[in-house]
Length: 274
Image (tube, rainbow, N blue to C red):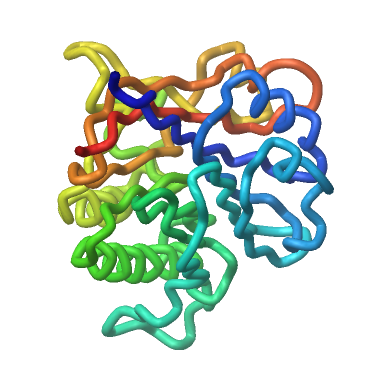
């Protein structure tokens, strides 16, 4: 009998302490094997007590108080933790730009023989602003880090809030976003360079031809969620060596109700390679 598929999920919770009850209910309902959280907005010592340990998860996390922060929770073991991409500063990096590489935006670990990373890419703020150029440099570093991991024995899965909508099909109205971040050619080129390492966009891979992969983010303002004004900026990128992607789903229900995150959880099922 074949083993059960692996369930791997990513979710920008926009504050783990504020959403602890929601996260607990979601864990109980979905039982992912590996959980990647972003924008936890807490130090590791501030993770709500028992939230993961009582559900048989091991946890690795980094944070900076009230901003950024990424976390991995695993039921498959958790070893060889990496906490930064700062050593992959790209050539030509302008030292006058904001230092985003040292922020707590990536953590990775070997979980059951797969190298998984929880990724929180910079927003970019405004096109051509210093933070926008720093975002592009950050993507260069992420690509270099990922290329180095792909050369290792364990297959790689990246999951998180990448703050890029890869194509016009990944936003509700391309015309409404002209001149905004997340959709510029330079950001999409950085995304394509990352994918070009040989990674598969899991949600897109299992979306039927002619259909659009589900959005994962909706602004809090203007009733965007109920109007369907969303974007697909949260992704799970799978190196084929990790196994076959069986399914992908977005938890729209988690975006409803009182005080939700502005992101919905994305989860895939994976048949591990033999």
